[in-house]
Image 1 (tube, rainbow, N blue to C red):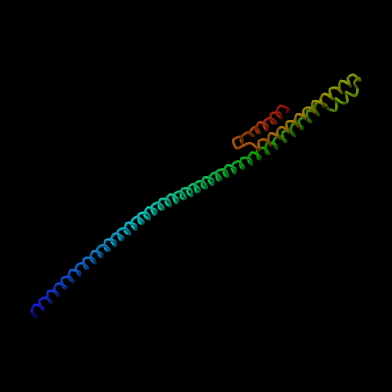
Image 2 (image 1 turned 45 degrees about the vertical axis):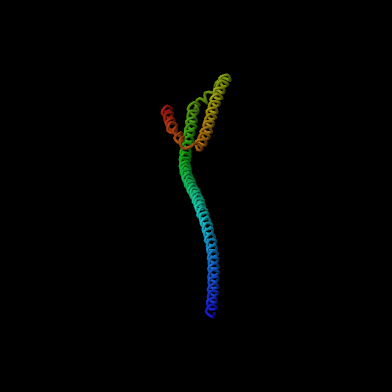
Length: 223
């Protein structure tokens, strides 16, 4: 009897132990399933976070590449503008230097022309003085003192003829003097005009030797 009770008690205990073991197994499987589910969810979250970070990194790299390209193009444009500005400044300096040299050459040519014109004016003045002197000498030779004495003894008709000849001679002398004055003014205007001419016309005042030759020719003729 006691053995049956003990056996029954053991069976009950074993049954309870099996139930507890089954319950523990179920609970453990449930916890394991929950843990696996949480682990899958965590793994999915980590994967999603890694994907987001990867996409963000790609966007950052793309933005960096775009910014680098834009910065490079901007720097290149600035360098090109600076180089162009330097070239333009150098060209302006070269142009100003060339213009300066041209103006200096023109000034030297104008000074030389003015000097030649002054020399020519002096030659013309001397030539006019020589002509006036020759005119006075010729006038003295044409109307000597003896002719004046003979004219005093002539008739009134001859006196009037002599006066007429004298008047004609004086008119010719005045006309010659007027021509000389006109030639002098024309020569002065021509010299002033030559001062304003460019370097290519600097050789224009060369007729001066011809003027100097003319008085000597007249002197030989008059002598």
